[in-house]
Length: 172
Image (cartoon, rainbow, N blue to C red; front, side, top):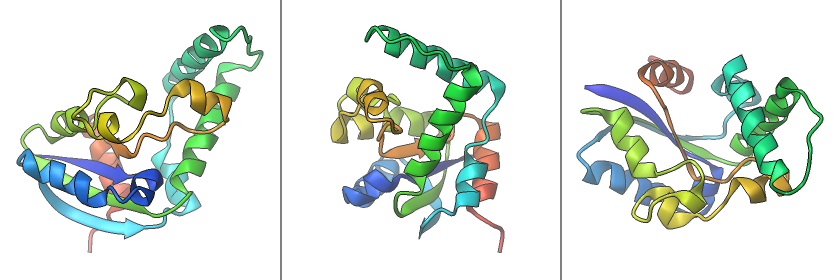
């Protein structure tokens, strides 16, 4: 059985979606084997968002494309853009309480990612958590100089899940 980390981010907690997220996870046959409500520390947020050069390059490319559509040219380096976005992500995670869950089941990582929907809520399919409860967009987030409010986080790979679970849940 595979395990993954799921976070109900501060906006999901503020919108009282904790029970909805848990219910949807359980309805598809996955098991919640770890659960806690906490306020993330600055250190935990830094460790959670350990980002690679590949990530910075990808984010910078997407950011430049989005701004170009608005007729704006960015003179920042990939690293500068990536660090700015990383700062927004960390600030977002620190805005309020977070619910952290370890979810276990057959192909849990893929199952959860399908359940939560596309990262950009405005493009998420109805029936997914993001598609049903948010319409935020990268364009609005960029305009407001903040991270996209997409309610939940889910690990994207086995390696990422293992690293994140160790960060958020300490062995007793």
